[in-house]
Image (cartoon, rainbow, N blue to C red; front, side, top):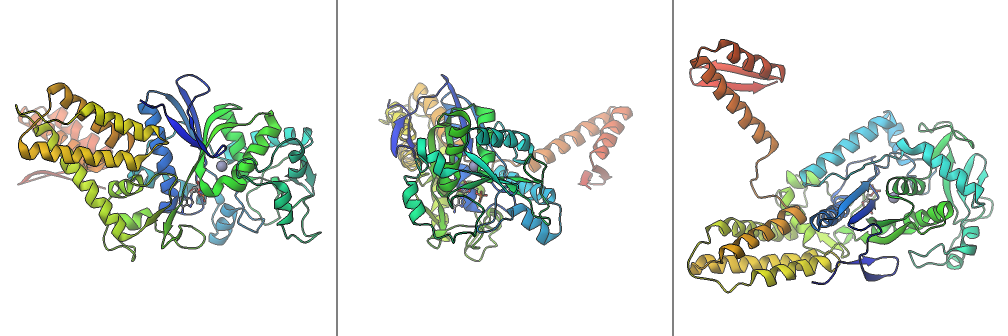
Length: 485
Ligand code: AMP
Ligand code: ZN
């Protein structure tokens, strides 16, 4: 079978994946800036990396997946105010209340979409000390300079030995020519220079002491510091949305090169955008749909509600490097496809017959792996899954089956591709609430048994301990019911 190839945005080619440490993968993905609810565009990017994380795990790699939470330093475009600070000021809340609210929202949404949790989820505010140390190193190397309490990265000086623009295919001369910044308007030496540390204005609420001023770190720096802290000065994969390639990731490369004199990342991966009405889904323009508006069908653009798995299937039907446009019709088509897949999977255990099918399970499985090994090509994988659906339906209609070995193999493979790697959930799979309800019913049954046995101590214990969890039992003519307060 072909080895796993990954499209590396640094070389703009598909390269065979060779991890730095045998059998291990270190992967960093830029996380959300937690100042508002995540929209489906954000989710799509994280979902692509969730699938990639799942595939590496499936292949048996020991993966350390780090996805940060940006809770400081991300400046509002054309402003000197941090996005979280601004929101906190407008809503008259503590910045950490904003951070808490939207971090919880982010986790809730990802849980609904059946995401796996990363191994480390570091926050920018938890790494201020490390960021200050990195700035000192960059200044010592002569690549950072202080002006009025803020520190900037000297892009022009860096570019004398290295290439600022290596990732996004730009060169500094063009960037300089294309910048129209009026002289004297900025305290930076060159318009391309970016902030490592910003002095906080008196009204700026988020501030930390540093050798230069009371201020806050630059957004690009947090990712350099957190990725290298947990994955090493050089690590395997760095991911994020396409829109982060420049300047965010370009700056990350420059900072890491400045600190460690090493290219930090072997494979840069960029996920493409989810669009709505042909335009990028975005927080700032308001052109977005929130996942909860899809689950309850409350968004006027949708004709109905859709389950997280139908939406996840819709996302997985596109390659992560392709643009995907969201519409009610497209979601409906995906939902139909998803249901067809689930119905076919449900038929597999019934395929018992003496008549043998000609379906070659092992060749089919190879095709599925080839798709995934070709830069995680989920649409091709899904096309293969529909080939399997066709075969299952044929077998079911003609009462044909597979040998027991092939059938076992097939069931294992389908489960791996559909549930473990694509991360889909069976329609109607039991929710946590349902599980808890079932458990309470089981305890009620045990209590009834205890009462029949006149074991009053045990029956009281069950009632009292459930009450301790807020579950009140009510004994009535119809038996025992419960309520939760
Ligand atoms: P942010 O919270 O704005 O820093 O964005 C979090 C992640 O979502 C980043 O990786 C962005 O590249 C990604 N992202 C933002 N908008 C979209 C979109 N419309 N489609 C896909 N990914 C997006
Ligand atoms: Zn980042």
